[in-house]
Image (cartoon, rainbow, N blue to C red; front, side):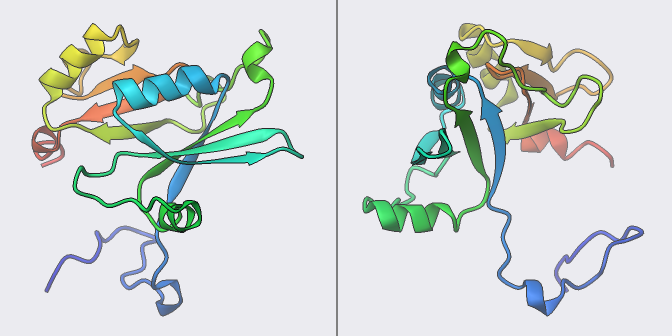
Length: 178
């Protein structure tokens, strides 16, 4: 029998049949300046912008980013690409409320200051040491380097809005919690 789920209080063993086909699609972060944030996510983390949606009446834009595999075929047609984007897993949505980039008072809570709430997003990298060298070369701000603290082999960096991004290497994570 294949793995289904870990057993913990509150966990149902079998997902209800009514939830078949449900897929976690994206998480959203508000950003002050889309140009700065897009430069960080596309250059430092190698993400691609799959789709931008503007809502003129409400004065905000949504940017949907992912890190597709090189061999993955993304539709060119805008409507088909929009449909495809909303059928994927692991998308990051950056929301820009127009004008915040020019407002010195505008900033967003990173979720890690009091009162705590949202904590972080996470990127898995093939080689943590090479990723750290890349972040250093790009002057990325750290919350925690892999050699610091009690949890070794895990880094936390900050994006331009101060959101925390956990950086892990899957092979190193296999040793945690065993």
